[in-house]
Image 1 (cartoon, one colour):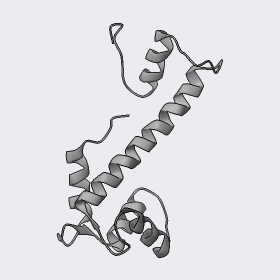
Image 2 (cartoon, one colour):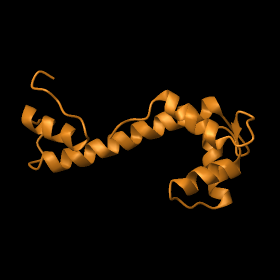
Image 3 (tube, one colour):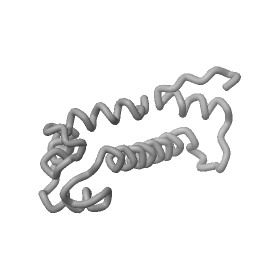
Length: 114
C-alpha cells in the first residue's frame, strides 16, 4: 500500500473544494464519501465534520490532520491483519523472513539488510 503524502492530500482537498473558499461543506464531504463508495446521511456527515472542526465547514488544516489520523489508523488495522496471517502461532515475535513476507504483502520489498 503506497501511503498518500501531504501534497496528495492537499490536491484531494483542492479538488473537493468546488467553490475555492479553502473550506469543505457538508455537500463537499458527502461527495468525497460517495466517491469512496460510502453512503452517509446528512446527519452522519455533520457528525463526522463536528469531530473534525464544526458541522458546517472543515478547513484545509483540519482536513489534513483528520486524513493523517485516518491513514495511520487504516495502516495499523492493515498491519494487524497481515500480522495475524504471518504470525500463525500468535507468538509475540516474528522472524526476519516473516517480516519480509508481511511487508511484501503490503507492497514493500525489503532487502536482507533492511
